Every structure is written in structure tokens, then in C-alpha cells.
Length: 424
Ligand code: SF4
Ligand code: SF4
Ligand code: SF4
Image (cartoon, rainbow, N blue to C red; front, top):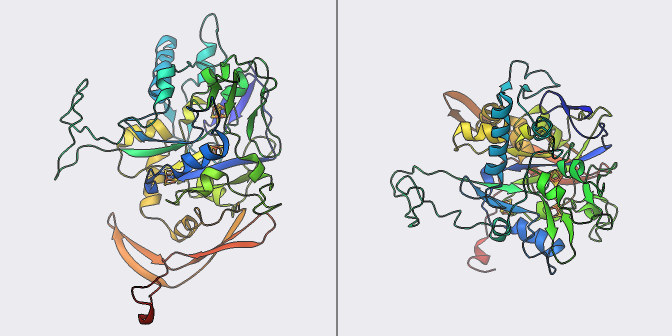
């Protein structure tokens, strides 16, 4: 297989195709700390794209509760187990060397284990381009099954009483993981399709599946470790998230010609989501674009991290990890940048606090932001260190450079005048 450079791994890796990158890349940041699991995103997608016969179990966007839930059931536990077995058989260890993590080309250090492509190469004879599996019908059938019924430390494996944990002490933790297709740089679905029915668009890096070419072999379903390629029995071809490409192209009649955030992003009442496009260099690195909010959050503040980077797909979804979950669990899920990301998030600097106000603030994609300084409004000590808050103003600009949103760090308060007391 050819070698390609994966910046999330800080090294070259093998992939079935030569490296080829789009001009712009569709990407998003989700702040896990703010999600309320309302599933509005899930239904925004379903009511737009997957409401037809044969799509009943097709949730292109889903929100699952970790560590108790997954959709399809057990997806990440299963792929992690396969990867673990592959390391055992190869006598290798899945570890990160974080010594050079301040090097721009390897912000998380270097992954020294096997990706899902490299693990497949070690199989003799090699059966697939990536290790994977096809979920069963049962695993696809029921999202969010008992996920939020905290069983706590007093329940045991096989115990079906689901007795809740008791106050005053919580021994149970969980968080919500929001998931859509990552429109990966090195997509396993693209790599695995024998019909070359799946392709990555040059203009925005969205990964699409050509249903005319697809023959329903389900190699994409098997290979995608995130399980975001799905099979539709009524048409006998596969389908996947389309990145709401008409909105990215500016074809939504709501604002013709203007790139808009996708349906699942723009519907989020928890304001946990921001989606955008990042400019790519021909070598697959992100072009320096300091004032692009996604670039800032991922590359400058380093507060948002890829999901399971060790799989080797260079996914384009990034997550601000939850503050309260055990660090080893989070490091396995988001890589070695977790501790630094949480430190930044817990005591954000002025710019990070301002940029956070842009999440879900407009349906238009923000290509650039500016921060105007405001007065100091609060000070505190966080983790033994002094911390100050300023009421700065953040302004977001669309693709044409027009201002589309302006917000302040401090939530504005509106006092209802007496004459409207208790009236609408
Ligand atoms: S709409 Fe937003 S807050 Fe609600 S579940 Fe989805 S990501 Fe979470
Ligand atoms: S998340 Fe899965 S379906 Fe989406 S591009 Fe990556 S490999 Fe393909
Ligand atoms: S980007 Fe569009 S198609 Fe993809 S999950 Fe979100 S709403 Fe669905």
C-alpha cells in the first residue's frame, strides 16, 4: 500500500490510495461538556434525509451515552478489541510517543501502534484493506437502550435490576457522545469499496456514496470503524451522511449563495456545535488560518481533539472532552492531547472564552472571527491560579467577509419593564 502522511498520528502510514486532498475540508467541533442529549440534532437529520422506507434504523447523526451506550451496539468496544488482538498477534504495543508534541507537524506526538489499515496488512493472508466487522441487525436495531439508567457500583454484570446509584455519593459517571460521519481524510469506506462508489469531493472534502455504482457489498459498513456507512435493505445499496452538501454549497433557499451549517449542527439547542470549512495545503496539512474558529480551536487552543485518532483515518470531527470522566478512558478515546485540552477548557483564556460564544450562534458558516476587548467583569482562583474574565465582543464573518454574528462573553440581561410585568 502507498504511504501517506497522517498529521494526527505524527507519521506516515499505509493507505490503499495515494494521498490526495481537497481544497477545503468540511470539519466540526463539538463541546461534549454542554450537550443535554435532547437529540434535536438526530431528528434534524432524520427528518431531512432518512425518513423513508428502509431507512428506519438509519441514524446518520446519533447521540450515545458513554460508556454505557453505543450505536450500533458495542461499535467502539468491538473495534478496539479487534485492534488490541491485532497488536497482540503482531507483538506490538499501541502507544503514543508524546516527546515531540509541540512540533506543529505532530501536535499529539507520534502514534507508534497499528492503524486499522496496518493491522489488516499484518494478517496473513490479508483479507481486507482494514480490520473491521459488520454489525448484526440486533446491534443496529435499538439506539439509546437504557443508556441513561445509571446502574452504579452496586449493580454487577448480568444484573438486570438497573438499581440507580444513591446520593449523596455518585460513583457513576457518563457523558454524551455526539456522532456523525467524520468525512475522514483517509476514509476506510473509500478504501474498502471494490466498486469505487465512494469518493471524497475536491471542493469540500465531503465523502459521498454514489448509489448508482454501489452494489450493496457492504464493505464500507464493515470497514468504517465509526460505523457511519449503513446498508438499506429496500434499495440494496448503502447510504451515509452526505454532510448536508447542498447547504455547504449555498443551495439552501433560506440564504442562496451563502454556505450554511449542516442541519444537525444548526439545530442544536445546547449550542455545543460549530461547523465549518478549513483550508487545506496540498500536503494534507491545514493551511495557516489563525482567525478561522475551527482552525483556532483545533490547532491553536488545542482544546478540541479527534475521535479515536489511532484508527488512522484522520477524522474531521473534533471534540472538547468532558471534564469529569476518567482520564485513561478519555485518552483512549481522544488521544494524548486530553489533559492539555481539559486544562485549557477549565480555565480558558480571553480568546477561547470569546470564540466559544460563536458555537451555534448563526446558521451561516463562519470563516473568520475577530475579538474586540471589553472590561474585566469577574475574577476568581481556578486550580490555585488567578483567573480573570473580560466582557469581550466576538464577531463572526461569512465566506464573503460580511459580519453575520456579534456576541459578548457576558450573557446580556434584559429586565422586563413594570408595565409588562407578568405579560407576554
Ligand atoms: S442537539 Fe445539541 S445538545 Fe441536543 S443532543 Fe444534539 S448535540 Fe446534544
Ligand atoms: S466516518 Fe466512516 S463513513 Fe464517514 S468518511 Fe470516515 S470511514 Fe467513511
Ligand atoms: S451533516 Fe447532514 S446528513 Fe450528516 S448527520 Fe448531519 S444532518 Fe445528517
